[in-house]
Length: 88
Image (cartoon, rainbow, N blue to C red):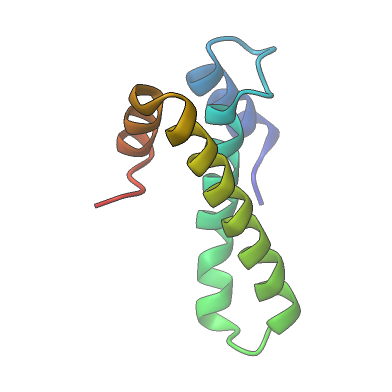
């Protein structure tokens, strides 16, 4: 689970200010943090299918946000994926 302090830190880092919570970069960063926190749970609990569905929905939402960002602004997309370490 992501703490409010960690969320505020991510918003400030990727949004530029504390108020900019709706930008694509902030949304992707928050989703990435939630996905990273949930991944060990699913490695341990392989039969948690309903929780896995929620994780897959988060991954799909992140994918669609990244797809939108790459179509609109390639430079911001490249900067974001390198900072988050998403693509190899």
